Length: 254
Image (tube, rainbow, N blue to C red; front, side):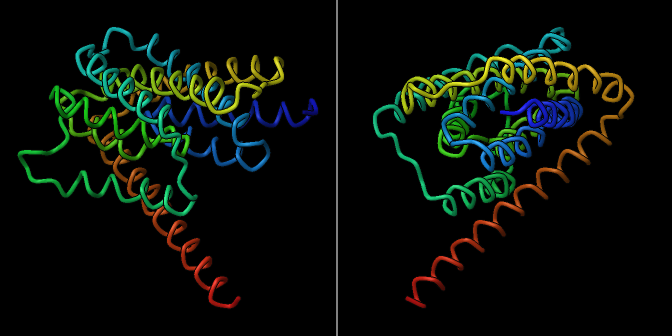
């Protein structure tokens, strides 16, 4: 990559890490879309994993006093189950299917009966959500809409939500790095300079968001977080549906 492109990606990573540092979501989704447009899929997934590990890891350090370790431990069990399963089947869905899956799952979580609403303190829910979210991560590179919906169902304050989710995401992206960099494509490599810029930019954006998160009220955090999830999930559904329609139209024309 040219120095100009590396610098541009660095600025993008600062911005996306700031967004994720503020709401614990959305930044990684924007970043993966850009990386997939300019890099081969395995390399994009590896760089995205490194960037998100740095961003989420630093966020977890900054808010370490607010981490809820029980949900993290149960989530790790789900990650391990998903990695084992996907290492055997290596299933990669078509892009439209993956997008529709990502878009539909948050709304399905919201429509669950009151007794089954997302609860990060629940052991069985944590394991199930961990497995599903990790499966989505390995298929599409991101799982934010569903994971965000899961943690917003918690009775945690905004700091605990951001800190605990960040810790879980470190494990998710490490698993993704192992999967794409070691199982799917062992030849996937990155420019060391780009990797260093990614780590530094992610830590900077996360640090800049801390003061604003402190100033935000609980109601503002949850309101905007839900709006972002709805917008992102709706985009996935619309874009995935458009791709399905375009493919069918093209097939009919032939």
